[in-house]
Length: 357
Image (cartoon, rainbow, N blue to C red):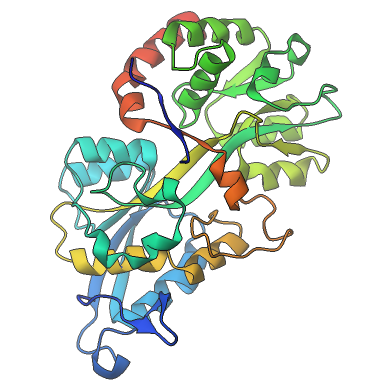
């Protein structure tokens, strides 16, 4: 039987020239003597649009200056942007997508195969992020953790692992993500594990979901729903991505985030080159730049993206709310997104019949 879990963690048309003492982190300008020549090249990047001012100043502008490039953004959610490049109605070169949607892009032939020899900073990132969807496609540039948050004022029993969510004492205090959300399949997988299955077992997973259903206040579709319910004490516990815990903590200072003892789930955002891009080498240079310690450290300290570059150093305060460090990342579980995509429709249909009927 095919496993749902793949297992625990076991952007210039020239190559990046190394700056100073030989670090892979700093790309030099594309012109002779380090000066850019001619009209700037256009690099079109498809992304979500959050923290756009930060990315424009701290990430895009330095790359534009070094490589004589003009970065143009196309903004939207995962599904909208993926559909646009599938239809061939844009001139996007690079696209940022969650691993779930990136797998769909791979299956529809929407991406170019990357030349990993040009992306030297791959050597500095966690193994789980190097090729989450196969060696021919783009890396994950950030990795988040899906774990559990709870309010100890409302939840008197300590939460340590996924199985604790099945405690009857949580009735009327629990929220879980909907099956149609990015993290829905992760909860379904955890249900299978709580049922005692070492490999994903759909029947056992749904049986366990029926058991916990009576404790659920609401299956949330958006993180904002979770944060609002938590802040208003409509719920006291539920799985959430660690990157959003700062919002929960702001509303409920005593809130606790837990990395489940059996492992949280890796939530990865990837960057890929769009099929037919005329700027493939430049796009690969940008991917390499995105993985550099400089960029990774900036975005981590701003608490925008958790770093995948292992050389990033954060203080205890800087690391709060960020998925950080070898010890944490090594414990993360990773779903097989190909398997998830193959079964998603059937799971949604069954969920609607048996869980939210």
